[in-house]
Length: 244
Length: 227
Image 1: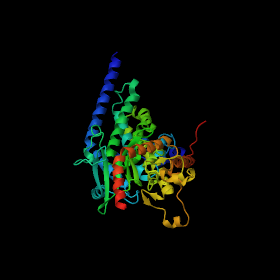
Image 2 (image 1 turned 60 degrees about the vertical axis):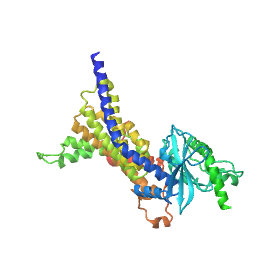
Image 3 (image 1 turned 90 degrees about the vertical axis):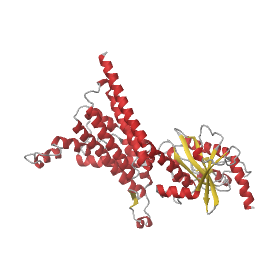
């Protein structure tokens, strides 16, 4: 009995000491971590619109902040696709503002060159967080990035690699009839698997060994393109009027 | 082993100077895991991370530093409380100590080396299950004084780090033509038709390199598995 008490006592002391030390570390480092996370989001929004040109070039924290400031503007839209005045994506509370969505406008040379929207969806082990950027026609993909996930390194985690993300550039999200067709991640390489030329703008190379992550990517693209469709439809209209 | 036994008495000074940083026994604790008893090439522990995080030398280095830090401190902590640890729950106590240290490293990386923490992803967390740590805690730190335990941790972690770095450097040179991110294979070679070896970037490439390292080491040391 005495022995058991000693064991429980010792276990309790170890647990309390460890949790105390961890709490101190977590709290002390929290602020810096949050700065890093915010910076990483900005970095990935920039990557989605193709800044820097070569995704392997690494921008310093200062460069990221500068270019973000220069080129991107976050707005909030409501369920009909209209901008909500006086709100930025930072004000969005995912629990309360369920019918409002964040959009980042990509500006260059005084005109809008693209729209970046956050995309979230399930992979195999984890939730995938990324950004999808469309060109002003709201049809052509400008870029895609994934910045947070817990997929298997070498397999599902390849979604955050440049080779996978490069696949998406220039692909189309609208079918010939103007409806959302979205983009599918297929099994194998597009050039070897897909024979129909008309289908090629809507498919990208898959990741071998990561079928479920690939399916997750396909599903989340379709989901978020639909969610944002009221907004994109409006922008498409404007784009058509301007180009005609 | 035989070589070390014949040369060391001759090399050792006849009279020990009064002040020495490490005693002979301590030196042995520190040096053995570097070569004769290397955790990766001899004990074949910690292979998982040796395969996973050695695509680039700098990532391997961050991982090595993390393991050195955790192993030294976990050995010290476990040695410090070794007389109080109840035998029945010793493994879970080791685990708690190691896990706490690893989480601290992970938090630190997220705060100060964010890009590395993304590249290393789950492998920092997996230091917890790295057999080297548990192995040294059970085999050494739980039975020895704090100072030798620290040296044992340092030696084993350094032995692990040495192999990790060797694999990382070789993989980066042959797989990406660079070293610590700087291009080292001259353009001229690429112009002549040299191509980076794609296998080296993948985990099987690390397997082959670790295998080669084990082969080289065993043929030098003359070590053979007993039947």
